[in-house]
Image (cartoon, rainbow over all chains, first blue to last red; front, side, top):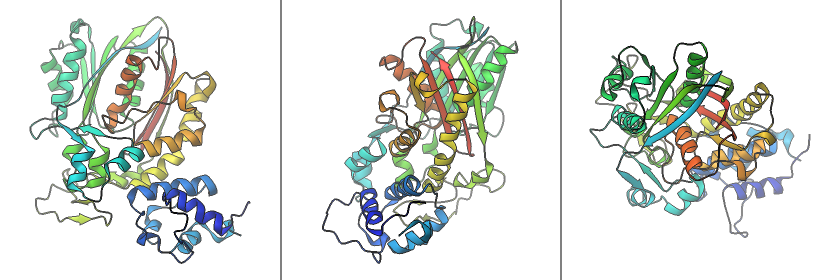
Length: 82
Length: 332
């Protein structure tokens, strides 16, 4: 299994959320739901991003529990990351 | 011998809701962002006193204007917005359209997969000599079920009816079907109240979904992320099964028409399945998601715009509420 770097994951996430500001600081501790770009449409983008990179579907009941980016990575599975 | 779609007509209710109108009501809604992501600018919606049966009647009369309606020997009516619990809307339509009485007619309750299932039934009825000329009417008014403050669903759905005539033909023009059902997801796209399990509740409390949409259990509920998860699993599989059952490949297919759910989902599925953009129908802009009617509307529009022409092989795939899904290949 190819493992993904955290920085690559954060970049994928920025793309999914259409965050265009390169300087906007996003870390593992950033709370996804507090981002201005996070809405019901961006959830679709995140689902697509996870399916594309990890061939996984996150149940919507788990989506509710997501807080930080780290918590999203834990949901996907630690084994998928370097 | 076989069956063939010989004509399609559709009708959209006159009233239009634009993104700009929605943006006025929901200030954090950007009209441009919606159009870019969901692919919808306008949707037609019924007025208070207008029903799916009314739309069906207009579409039915339109298609029979230049057709001997006494030749129609079966009526199939697909809707999830019925006039009554009983009788069937199909029986009322038989009379209002002015079809003869020695014909069969019934309703069936399906959403986004409804047109595919209608074709499957029409084909089998023709090939088993039950009928020779069938009118299939799909008509949907989800907007009647949607709460006025439900931003997400008001953005996506529009109302429409389509009438399709399927006739006995020398050669088979409707291919093999791959059909699917998974009722474990029934709660993810549902109108919870109003049936006999949970009666309509005039005092139903408002539910805030935390992303700016409000509804009650009397209204349409859609769990968008879960529906997307379902399509990611089901649609690539039904595409490959449909191709396999018809002994063909995507290369041999001239055009692909998916149920028009929303642009983002359909585009993701297109890329995942490797369907070239040039072969892929996108028809949401001025109509939105009209549930069981998106596919016949898309076939008609694609013919009118010369995206498809006579003898083209067109892959049709419907998927959604139920969950229910299906695919087939038609030769236009």
